Image (tube, rainbow, N blue to C red):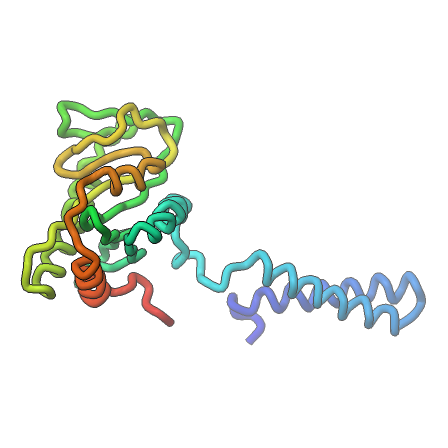
Length: 226
């Protein structure tokens, strides 16, 4: 059983304990000291692992970009905004990193961490490039995700709800503040809060609650609750 990958940390802990016990036991010529050293080494490794290892598997943890955006959005809560993170689009592999519902509307924010060494540029307000790479597929995906969320929430509530798509980019310098490219707002990740709050208020508290609850139902958590 201990040969299985999920028990690798136990094998390592046992080796550390044995090594500590042998070294101190031999050096001090006492099996009691060796046993104590082995126990203390095992305890130390347990504490270290608890402090440094996440209980969430790596493939389920949010990216650095998502965590940075999440931190910004949390500050909007006092202003009446509510956010759902990592929500799946049913019957697809797509994910909305952050769905925000608040006084100024409903937003789908996809957080991107790009190589800072490559420049970001736009061509004719229709093409977005990161270095030599055309980001049309990424823009199309963000727009599609927002449209799907809009359709699902609209069906659930029986009234039209528009979800505004966006890309929040971290890493390279963005040579504009907020630019709409292929119907997707593109901006530096640090502008997420301003992008959301610098709009006219359009939703009441009751509307925010109903939209948020509908979104919570129709957009399931990407990774479930197991």
